[in-house]
Image 1 (cartoon, rainbow, N blue to C red):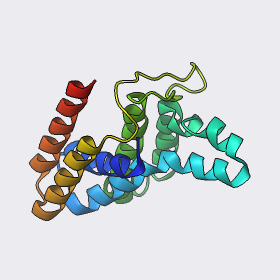
Image 2 (image 1 turned 90 degrees about the vertical axis):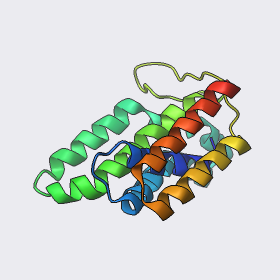
Image 3 (image 1 turned 180 degrees about the horizontal axis):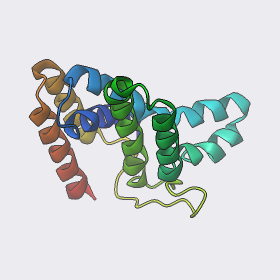
Image 4 (image 1 turned 30 degrees about the vertical axis):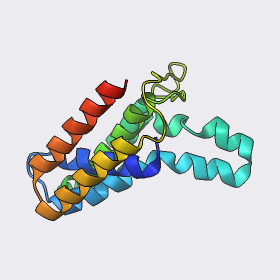
Length: 166
């Protein structure tokens, strides 16, 4: 999935999945988290084109490793409850949603690395303009209205589109 869609999906998810939220703040941190797993492509690109292909959608997309990193971060910052609630949770929600969206494309994603082989469903193209447009409209509406319901409706609409296309 393209990085803009991942950022919008992560931002909307971070807002929609929280009970009490500072909408703009959570959207921004969720959007940042939604793009973090794709940093492996940039790291691989620095060394060689082959490494970029081998590492992209690899360990950085593992739900197991993202969960362990999240738990380690929570343990190290247990004395700073406010930081965890306001910054880490939306960032982590965005990061966790990234590989789940990547599974839907035709490229294999290592969501259970190192336990299982990479998987893909192949329902969805990597770049889907209508999906991106739905997320973009939802993201803009959510940011301007600061409404959690707007984020939830946008994600519901995007999920319906995924089901329709897939």
